[in-house]
Image (tube, rainbow over all chains, first blue to last red):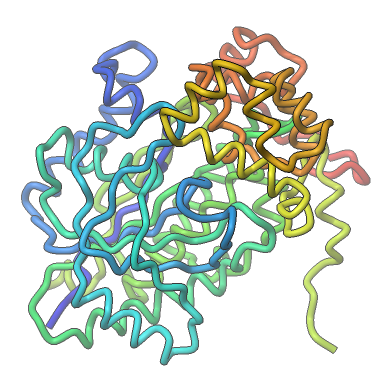
Length: 284
Length: 133
């Protein structure tokens, strides 16, 4: 059967992608950011996931204008990198996993999640920057990807508790898939940042570090954070952290933290990154 | 009665912040349609070639068109815009997202960049207008 063997969270700042693509990873501003991902790049080479369920948000590239889906699951064979106004990123096309995506679509709707299914969708930096950070510069991504786009832009977003429940349902869906697959789930976005208004540039390291702590040890507290509290404490774009809760819930009750990284800033944003292993996988 | 954890008016209580919602999304629909059209190289060229003629193809308000021509991001947010749409415009201009974002503060791009390098803007005093904390 398929199993979720690890969960990874990371910010997905577009400027990280731009620095990566233009060979500025060794510049003074960027070096500490990229160094924070050296560990996970080696980890991924060992782990060799077959499929990554990648929770991210579309930044008005494929969604959000004509349709505003709360949860949109990518069902296509391929997802092209989007042109976000400066040409497409020079990264490989993202390949989907139709069979597992179709199984998830069935199971999750049966579990009362009214998903939107995307038979065609371009993916923007929210999806491709995490792939670059985990796998580096490659000609082909080393695994299939099921993109799960979450509305974190237009209020009301789903609640943290709803994202948690979706993560639990994803865990069940993966475990009931008959083929042996090594599956990872990634939660992306965050941490604290605000990209608009006179309050732009907001960073809250206390909130972010408490969030990282509780992701391992005190998830009930995280589930109770309201949308308003995210906005007040972590900025209007800091609410992206609800996508980390989908990832965390899909790992089950107990996890072990394998790696953790926090750095301020990347452009406007506090960069956070954590790699988690479900306890029963860690204990074999 | 259904449970509400807080009145939605609380969303207007955050200093220096506009929460993007369904009503604002609709107000900015044609502005956002223009922004997303810039995801195509030919459209970017047509826009750069003659901004006003290009903008006139969209059913945006006069105020929205003028704010686009002025690159007045604060005004565009006031008129319903959301930053993820608006950066298509700043990307077309070759601006970094940081520069576009900094233009909404009372700082120069260099001052804003220095603030970010020094750890960003503290939430202290910026959580609630009413409570001033």
